[in-house]
Length: 242
Length: 242
Image (tube, rainbow over all chains, first blue to last red; front, side, top):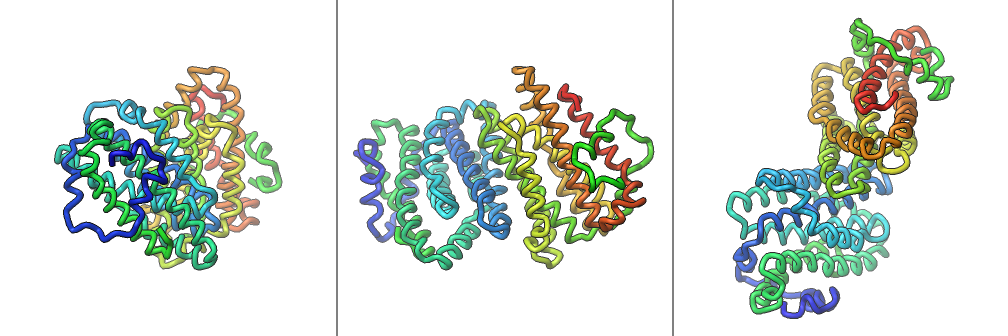
């Protein structure tokens, strides 16, 4: 991890995108050993889910058919439940949810702009890929929170998953127009870089940027390798080269 | 009601917008005596809620501050739960939800375009006004459905109401910039006309257009007067002239 923060997203993800066998070791534990600040964890998660909510709503609003609008509408319900859940958890801890989210507002808006894509298909792939990567990461990272918070967060983030609905829409679109595949494969790769940078920001927030660039950061590399391996499986399932 | 369908929205609503004392008679019963086609009722309601969902998501995405985005996010959750509930009810009756919605797709999209407004404040008022009017109407109109459906629909439409959140945002905006009030008052009046036309379309669908223009339609006028009186109270509460 030493050079994550000095490199471009493409340089960062290049080594991670080489096919590897997922490690046998319980890498998640590495991430769970960190103790993220609860306020920062929830604030960033809430910001990111709010950004996914806008993407989900756009995906419904701009879908090419009434069928697709109706099929994707539940995603909006699921993501908005996550936003509400995280905001409520922040409020229960007596803090101002907006104050907890504000430090992450600009970086999340940038992430949102960069991952919106051009056109509906890129937007839907973005929802599938970024929500998948962020879900894997924050569920693991929550392991370092106090147990009650950890369980609440994991319940909020995993209660309902809409990936099946997104995959069905993408699969149908690719089947109808196979030339979409290469464009979407390229787009998927660019999404990984931008999403990994959000995770590194979360880690740097938790352990300090110096530690993230040092040996402690290095030890975490297998975690990200595993998260990217899950991503590769998601792309494979769509017949897209990760 | 004789001339509703021959008149412009402004002509239609002009007599209804005169202040009146709400009638003492149980006017709702008039609407409940109709027996709407279940498929059409659910299809139109689902289409309208899908349109409100887009408005709600836009209101969150384009809010002028993170505070307002967070404050309004629960509205998206509430409206998306209504969409899901209505679509699920359609599916439970063995039909294709999309087929039930399709006949209302074009008129709902037109309604959506006409009620979107210019800028965030008009959009938020639109959500408050059109969701309020449509909620009052469809809850009453559901009275003519078979009891099990009636109860389900009323539960779906009334489970959670976000009007308090919308009023708080509007009130603060008007307090900060009192000149907004006249523009929003005008906008509120235009919204009533467009929303009433959706209700007339529902009635005409249920009893036939000829009946809606005839004595049966005339008998319903007090229902709409009452619904508009509720609207007037909502506008009054904001200090806006209805």
